[in-house]
Length: 295
View 1 (cartoon, helix red, strand yellow):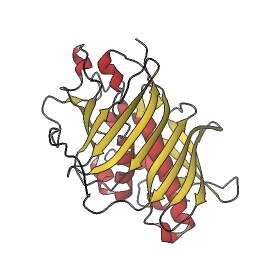
View 2 (view 1 turned 90 degrees about the horizontal axis):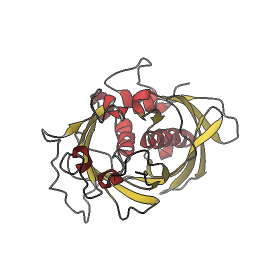
View 3 (view 1 turned 120 degrees about the vertical axis):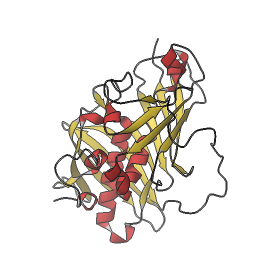
View 4 (view 1 turned 90 degrees about the vertical axis):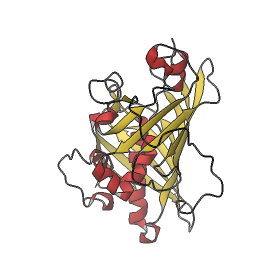
């Protein structure tokens, strides 16, 4: 049985809608009462190195929870995953994964659900989700980020296959992705402030599907390289815990991602990522605690 989110998706892979494939879920028989269970596939283009990108797993888990919540009560169809708190228990490989969802609370303004991402019989990502109504009005207060161009400039660093960044971060095969050269001092073998900026845009069919565009925005809030790279710390930075917020549906066009930190310690660092859409509105945010890559 194919779920509501994927009813219009072609079962064959489509190069113009690769993130729709991540959100494509097939309902499976439940193993426990009041629990939704789904089968999905995360293709190898959504990997960093050999392992699945963390933000993709969070967004896919949110898609599964959204599907189950809407199926449980049609009155909740307007609800969206406004917050996702994720713990990474293991690193899944690309390929088939299962999602198990349980609704914890149903309310008129707020609903709560848990989603487990499972592979090989093991829960590898555990996410607690809060559902509510997205902002759809002008903000009362919002700082401007006019110093960052709306679209990537000519000297931005691409993630296309075969490029230095694309050789490790394969997400550039599923979306347009560029890194700001001015802030990424590590690319020139220099040290700089622990901050990075990026531009990201989904493929056309992914952008045109409101649900997929929403989940794509959540995913993009975990897209920046670790900011300690500008301090000379390269390598894997395992995420200890990450919380992602979805504020509003993104407008079509480029997403701008700004990554900063409050402190890079000797063992751990925090990283905040802010996602703006083409109008300058805040569409997603994330904060994570991660381990500092050792020199």
